[in-house]
Length: 446
Ligand code: SAH
Ligand code: SF4
Ligand code: F3S
Image 1 (cartoon, helix red, strand yellow):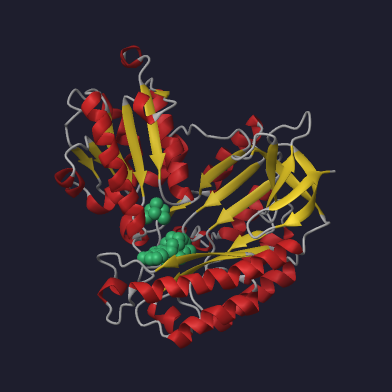
Image 2 (cartoon, helix red, strand yellow):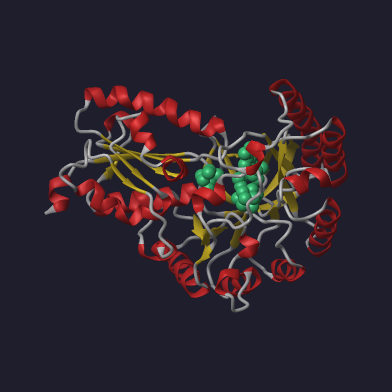
């Protein structure tokens, strides 16, 4: 009945923020398709629009507000269009979003993807102003029950846990995503096995801090056990994981990764800052000395590993000397790349209430210095790959030119190559690097 009524109706989802949101969107799409919606090619063709939002920085939120304004104009023309706000801004702002922008029909937090079908099937869905944001400790089991409509047939996101217990003083994530809840190893492996049977080759295990996976079971289960269990699954070639936390990663976990034939030679290990004073004020729970020791072990066990990081600049109280310590760390450690962010105060977090906030001009200048320093290093490391042959899994045509395709190395470096007859998405092939650039490598298949 329901399906018939909806026949021909179309949905469009927009995703902001991290990979966890990308993955949640796949499950949101799964819910919509279960009740008969089909994907719309363009936003303006949609009967329902769902925005899966992020509140990690102010500019992420501003993008969403801007887009809502745009959608309001479309809704004025198409009176049947429904607009739902999902994700972290939904969880953070709840009903206040609708008060501020009444064009929103419903608000649904990350714990309520399973309620979506019910909300939009209601008679009063449009203008009903339903708000579903209560915390639900069982929601992690939804990951196994909710069908995902995956974008790719080769690469898949696998959420292994929800939430974060770390409470870094700048970060909103623990407030919007709640405490850590892990999925069981059996449940995760069941999902991966069925993906392997469908022909998937690469999976990415997702968690805000994968190194604390399983600790909530309080029975000794940890991330190393999960890695070892996934190693047994035939068919999957590569296992990626993100994000790692320097405080919770143990040497045993590094050993499990090094011993695994599937775990990739890439680690995203956010250091956030080069000064111990800053790390303390950020509540990161490690020192630079510990970070370097851990990294040395990682590189000893996996010499070919690429390591990337996140950095925050302009955190309250950051002096010129502390900023210099981050620049020095970059030069000493030589990350393959670094994502650099300007500190953005988030209401309700301890850092937003700290004195000695840094002015915008200083933040921007320091950001530029971090980027300039890192770009030189990234370029040098990529240039050093010139002439070498690497195994890549083909991801498809590049955005700029459909005759130039790309694939990724185990170390997560993107190699662009001229398309060759017969090549398909998901092929594992050898590519020679001809030119190393800051962000990508140019090469050819051999
Ligand atoms: N759980 C991951 C990622 C969290 S969000 C981790 O712990 O690394 C991704 C990145 O956004 C963080 O690593 C941090 O560098 C940045 N970030 C988080 N909150 C921020 C804020 N208030 N201002 C600026 N950058 C922030
Ligand atoms: Fe935020 Fe820190 Fe948790 Fe990462 S570990 S999500 S930065 S609180
Ligand atoms: Fe953003 Fe939420 Fe991810 S705040 S970074 S979408 S967990």
